[in-house]
Image 1 (cartoon, rainbow, N blue to C red):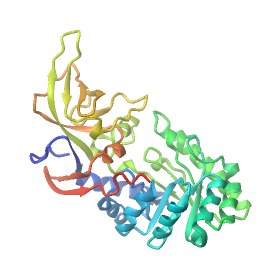
Image 2 (image 1 turned 30 degrees about the vertical axis):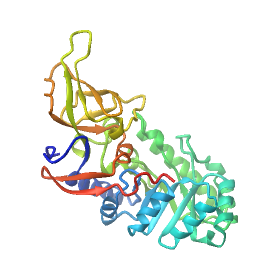
Image 3 (image 1 turned 90 degrees about the vertical axis):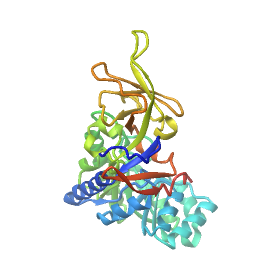
Image 4 (image 1 turned 180 degrees about the vertical axis):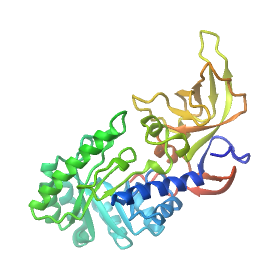
Length: 366
């Protein structure tokens, strides 16, 4: 990545254009080589400009987290959208889905007969315009049903007038050290079992969806037909620690300024303080992570504490502390959270700002 442009006031989120485009093309090529379709998760970036780049690189559509996100991307011309969570559809949600279905192909997730029946009831005559995917729990144990429960949910959805397209899972337990390979194997096994049971029950399964950034390139092809990675476009400190990307793959950083520095005296730690706290970095820190974020040029440093507007960075003894006023690039732990905290991002190329992109789907959480 290039230096922080002088016109940036810290803290500010920067996206390195060449790295972003390289990440987008590499994932598209990797999945294409395996015969898998790519349906990237746009909740990571929430920006139509990045979605357009993903679609131009071969993505078949987008994955989104909410109806609100789907509305934003449909307004910007995306015509194939999968809301990859088990939704509970009431009258207001049904009205919004009907509006979406007039603009794009809309697929929703479900993991219960009750939710499927509610969706069909409230969608009414438009139920056939919305497709449904049954969520399978492949080991993350968040939402989703066991493979042997998929037929029950699919029958309820079909009975409610919805079109059952297939099954999906989120192998979220791959977000842990030494777990991506195991999560990918369990994903393949669980989805394969669900597909076999649905086929035996008379369902035509046309889509089997899996994959996350840690597991996408490990995803098997005996059952899965598409993958839904999101973080890969930017990379983040979690992916670095999991070994799923390198520093050269980090496309998004937070520009920050050293506002306080302390050499330490044996009773207090050697540290600097940056003007980038939880309100721009986010506060996520999984139990296995070594800090609240990393520094691009200083891999031995660790963010050990966050307040709203400041980050405390423990500095290694074998390198000089940065000077007051020095500007550093911070890699957030969880990039999806960081992006959702700002209105726009600086697009950087060759050490200068070439554009600013609005985070168009920011806050569209419903």
